[in-house]
Length: 127
Figure 1 (cartoon, rainbow, N blue to C red):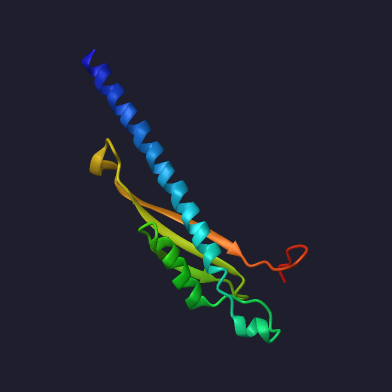
Figure 2: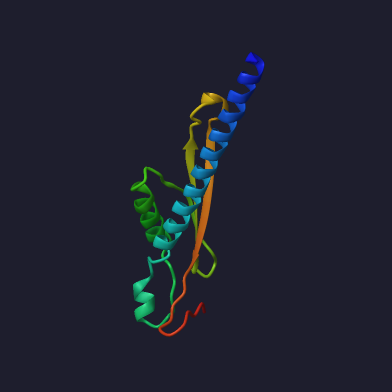
């Protein structure tokens, strides 16, 4: 009976801590996605006003993403723009500390999110 009880406690601990890790991974992905969205709003205004098109500024996008993530105690490990400057990708890492397994299951969880710059009045245009 004691062996079965110990086994049952171990299984419950694994289920609870695995579920917690999945929640942290989901939340980290969501934060990365929103940080990419915020970063994608940092347009080169002079280029827009001169009719040169819509383009995101790299440094401003990183600052905005870090400012957003700072609200949640996180920071952007990496903020990348594609060659056209229209797709922002943010990578975020968060620590996960298991509730029941202690240091045995402690590790970093990585989240990644991207946002594509779209514009348009009646419908979204991506060019």
